[in-house]
Length: 271
Length: 114
Image (cartoon, rainbow over all chains, first blue to last red; front, side, top):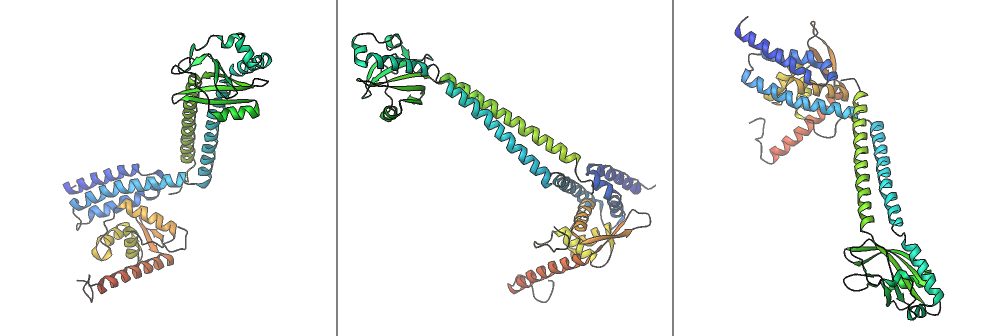
């Protein structure tokens, strides 16, 4: 065997080995014919090796990419497969949203405890004794007696504040920046008509309070506000949001991998 | 693309070169590669992978069909279908119109190849 034929035979064997890189159905259908075409090209004396080898290498890379992409398209672009994946993704998204919204809502509602009981008990006591009489007699319930000791910005303790009918502070357990903040007048108007309101009150940009406001009726009407800093509840809400987000990413990942595995294992077997 | 319909977009150089090569009659892989490489065949340097990948998609689209195997079954022969001939004719008309337009703009000399 001449050196040139030995060299050609090696090139052909290398090309035959490279055939294994093609998707199996394509390889099974066309590998012998492709190998023959390569053999014919090697025997064509009008085509120099310097032209042929780069041409075949470039063709190998491009056609490998094309055939694998075509294979992937056939495997995964089936409508039923895509529809199932989309439905599962929608369900996973709905579930993750529920996992975020429901616990957050429960946490937020729970943040109104014990303010609900504090506000209604104090409002009932003030209503019974009369707001001014109770204050003048110095018999304000113990709840409000330790005035100004709670820092609304930092303490997680619940507190109460009593306002008169015009919204002026009468007594307060809590302070913010050395003063007792007053909710917007609209809140008092609402409570005048509806007896009670439960709000997230932001007396300062970085302070949010879970507040319950009760109406004090009678000859000396007023309002009782029971509140508590929401910092802890909000950090728990953020944690719930992170867990829901991680759950969503996990579910989408499982759906993606499942779809890829199922799509690949049930791909059309024809070239 | 559904079988039996001609493509609206221009053909890829590889598909055009294969159709043009098969317009002469049935051929095997390397003959098509050689024809495509020649300037009158489109001057497209086709390798075996691109050739057989294109042939597979062209068979699926109904442009070409396999016409047989060589005696040693290594060579596969292909020929144009009626649809393939129509597709080639449409593409040639499109190219002809483009060349005529180029001539009228003075981009090409009149009366044939320069």
